[in-house]
Amino acid sequence: MSEPDPAAEVTNPAVREALDEFVADPGARGSIDVLRWCLQGFLLLDVTGSDIRMSADGTEIEPGSTVQIAVTSGPDGESALAAFTSMAEIEKVHSGDGETGGAVQSLVQPAAAVLELAVQQDHRWVCLDPAGPSCALSRDEIDFALRVPRNDVVRQALDVVNVDPDQRPVLLDALRADGVFVLAVDTPDEPADDVPEGTVRLRTTTLPDERPALMVFTSGPEAAARAGSDSFVVWSTAEVHDALRQGEVDGLVVNPSGPWAAVTTEELLGSPAGES
Image (cartoon, rainbow, N blue to C red; front, side, top):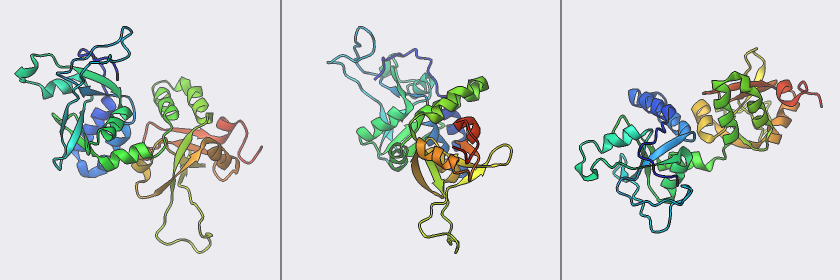
């Protein structure tokens, strides 16, 4: 766990924006956008009332400390871990609470680690910004997000390039590194007569120049946000590169729900499709 810092200025505006959109229209996309953004950045835990002593370098909680992590109730009354997008959201919970004496405490954690903690402590929900507007992620959603392998390196590179397009080499290096990708599998109601049984039909899209491209995703929730009705497969980086070399598509579109990037086969692999 990280050092408690009541004055922390850590915020997660992406999750907060997804929460606002969910609350404005819960039926539009459900909570999938909230879930996919909860695999990025940081969230805060409310540890008000804890007695925490840190190591000299400030990186470890010393033995004998007591950490009280706030919990709440989910929509069905079951236990929920409370998680927050900013210190201000924690303070909203304690507004008018004389018991804290103003000493509100927080721990900053990677957002994915908060989901993992909810599972470790056997909570049925993660309730985000419970003072509202709020959204509760169910245990099934959390398990799905954590069960499917992720490519956090590529996902983080997308953020970098989204802010500074000149950093595109960072994304290309991430796409070349060993890792995994989630791909959506087209599952038509009626299989075509000319398609052999057992054939995997991967979802494709187009590059900006309209050439065909393979859709690849950095996590299960990213795939569900774009192709929720499809099945998914997990491929290694090498398998994705091999598919590009076969020449049936001319590049990749990564995380089309955004932030996204389109990359041609030639740009990524250094040779036109179909050439060794």
